[in-house]
Length: 231
Ligand code: 6PG
Image (cartoon, protein in one colour):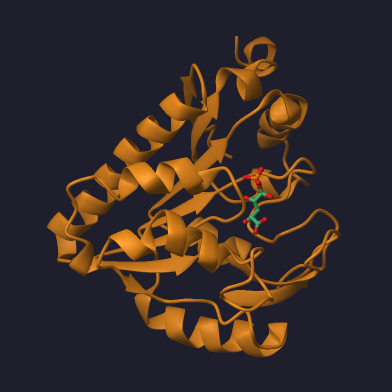
């Protein structure tokens, strides 16, 4: 396993700025190389500030295809919808080509339709990721059944509501050009240090330790226990 490229920021606002800069650079490089770029956004709360800053970066969004790392199986206007969060913080403000996971459908159907739409666009250029307190990422949870080999996106079940989810698989995330992990807050410091320790293990167990080499964008609070491991 290749160790992460770790960037530490004083606070969440600085992290959001740094992450927006790096993601914008990755997207611009993809556009320069092949005329288009693709990104899978992560969900929940951490990425919102990064999205807002990304909307202001000088990118040709008409050349950018936006996908999602995962979605809760709820309607697109539901407060729990990752699409709704991304729409409010980014997609309403840029002319990107958006490929939504249809959370209003049953998980298996939504996963199948999303995989079919995403397949011709693989590999993704950028996958943004978050980390839950339990070490999950996207909607890949500890102890969950392994996605079938070759699967692009699958239905999964979350231990917390909304339980029904659709998620990219480890394979799809690992195949991307780059993975950018955003982690904020002291509440995640112990788990993040555990993840770092797992990266050296032959068979990492925590989902966020199994996604391939990543660019870690972390605030000092979340990185506070990393120091002992990375010195
Ligand atoms: C989701 C996310 C999930 C998220 C982590 C961190 O749909 O819940 O994709 O993987 O990134 O749970 O969530 P916070 O950013 O809210 O801490």
